[in-house]
Image 1 (cartoon, rainbow, N blue to C red):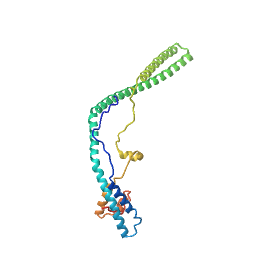
Image 2: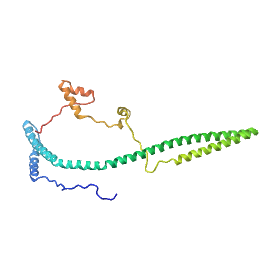
Image 3: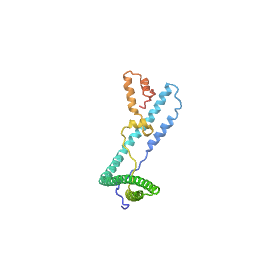
Length: 248
């Protein structure tokens, strides 16, 4: 495939600027807020809260503007993603189909290789046993000199040669069984029981506390007049209250 563009965004681009009035307002707010260096009594607390609310109001206004401006951009982004997804659906399905065929073939080749390896192992064991039997028969023939022992030694040697040939054939079959180029086997897994994995090897499991659920649980206990801090301790959680300053 050449370098021709497959997707083109048509229409005018965007340029984004902060208004001069906003820059001036920001500078004034920061100048006034930086005068707050201490909160030593309720009067100073009220003054600090006033400046914090002023800062928050501008932050909220900018955030609202940001969302309004970004909305059409997000729609364009979703349109781009969906257009590409729709276009590639058949491509990806075909990729998956062929990948499945390759995987099936590779699995079958691996199965055959395992069978051939077992056959080679058995042939090797048979060849070893035949070699030992031939050696024992030859020793017996050399020691006794009897015709029967000599004949047995020759028969044992012939059997050894046959098993050796079988071993070579098994080795050749195994060597000829190869996975196709571009295909490899990589480890993957399915989890049967994540709790078992965590108990056996916690470093393999990522866990995180559900903050909103914990806080909701605290509120339920507080409404029921339960000692929240004591109850939380039983679960390994240190519960405490902290000051929350309103920006409204």
